[in-house]
Image (cartoon, rainbow, N blue to C red; front, side, top):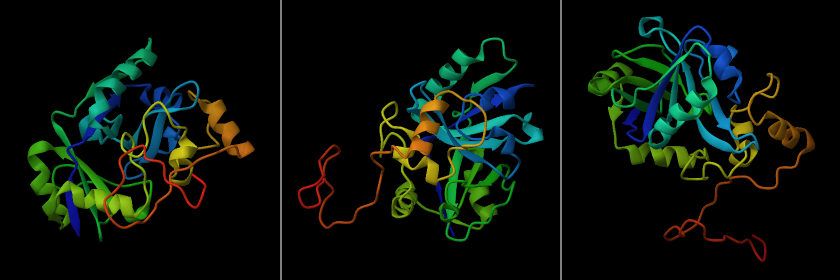
Length: 241
C-alpha cells in the first residue's frame, strides 16, 4: 500500500446546530447522506451552475465537535470560507479554515475504509473506489497515520499519476474554477451531484443539463508519446477538435 501527504489540500470545518441544513442548500451532494465513514463528493456552484470549488465532505467526529470537514484545494480554502460566510447570514454555524494545523493524506493499492487511525480520521474516497482512502490528521501525525494504514510514504506526484491514470479530473489543473459545469468535469459520473435532493445554488442549470442531455463537452483521457503539450493547446483527431 502507498500513501502520500497532499500539501495542496486544505481543510475547512463547518459546525453548529444548523450546519447540515446550511450546506444542504449550497452544495451539489445530499448532505443528509454524509455520515461517519460515508463522505460525499460535492461542489459549490455559481447561480449560473459553474463550479466555484469542489471537494469531499466528511462527517467530523464527536471528539472534534461534530459538524463537517471539507477536504478542498488549499489555495482556495480561504476563498471557500469567505464564500460560505457570505451565505451564512444569521445561520447558526461556525466556519473555520483549519489548513494550518491539519493535513490530508491519500492511500491506495490495498487501503481499507476504516474510520480512525493514527490520531486522525480515515474515509473512503467517494469519487471512485480505486482512488483508495484519504485521511485527515494533525500535521505532526502524518507518520503515525501512515503507519496505522500499513502504507509506505511516497511523494505526492505518485498519487497524482495514480489519479490521472484513473481519469479523475482535478479542479484548478484539469479545469478552471468558475468556467466549467459539473457535467463537463464528470462530476455526474463521480457521484458528485445528487439529482434527487432539493434546491441548491445553481441547481436549475445542472438539472436542465442532466434531463435535456445538453452537455457539449467532457474531460476525457488521452494517451500519446513525447512531452505533453502546453495547457490550452488544441488537440485534434483528424480534422476535428
